[in-house]
Length: 459
Ligand SMILES: *Cc1c(COP(=O)(O)O)cnc(C)c1O
Image (cartoon, rainbow, N blue to C red):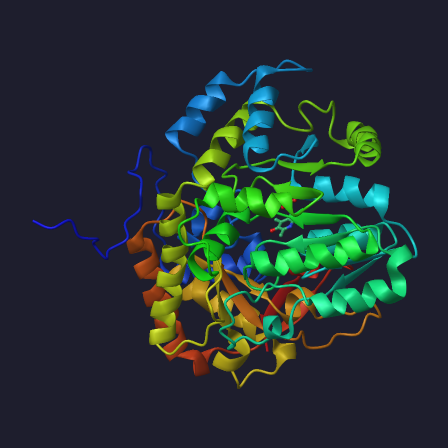
């Protein structure tokens, strides 16, 4: 017979060890949610069936990663694990200096602790929340410059994460001395996991060169972004993903990374750069919070797990499955008439709760109300990205966020197609009965980052 390409895209792995999930009843879930103050962050994982709260650190490691953990060496300085980690990072990101950190935000804290400060301004396509928090904590201003299409949930632009290069040029024309560096987040997490094209990064690089500014990547989802370049950007279809990643890296002067995302670790991160003087300062800061620069807040075994995970992250069978399985969920929901953000991002599907629940005003938290209903009706835990998360102004006045979304984030290599089919069934059922979902009122909230601990009751 002829060699054909089958259309079913399967999980490119078989299950090696299992983690049982406990089935729960609707009434049990309603009780647990009420006990948790109707905050999904307050639930015990044993009471959750399908956990789509985040893709951060929640992925499944491979047999090779677990084997690497056994090889981990815990020498304080110069451990073999460090050299394996360094070599694996350099294969993709050949920056001169590499500082491991315990998470991505630790890399941000060190970087902006050195280059930030009052009067400074940091442009980015969209700052991730911890990035923004670290820029602002230093006293600097964080400016988001994503292209206008990036704010339109229904716009099918293939690279909605692109930076608005003209806006960057304008900012630098007026405030160049205040800008320590330019950052680009790949993929644009807070903008829906939308990719940045190589053409856009090249144009960004040109503007940086024009003003003599370093360009840093927030590279957490570099492999997913590279896959989108391979499949959407002209001229890259036949290029290996690892080469595309190296091309992205070659345009930058440094990077921050959370190894809990594409590098397939459960913990870890790093900061890397070419500039010797900056690296010296960062290394000194890193010793204060992360430890000696050859382990940086991580056990040797974690460095080894990341070293292996990085190579698996650019495997094209894995990436084809990864991106396909996310869009599989998105396509099914779209077909069922559920309003979703398009095109589908790499790591998550976003439901437009404001559109699905038009009877709820934003200050009755339609996103959070929908997320609660998905849990009660089917045990699916998701995350509100809307007025609960962003609605409190620095002036203490509450206002509707620009959008009320519910994010279904897909942990890497963790759920099978039947888990996703079940999720589709739950979301479709809840969407069909959307008018029965009531609004919520916030009962208690902390001063900052209220979405983690606020409590609610029905209106
Ligand atoms: C997760 C994330 C971070 C922060 O990384 P942590 O490991 O969670 O501290 C920074 N930027 C982006 C884009 C992220 O997705």
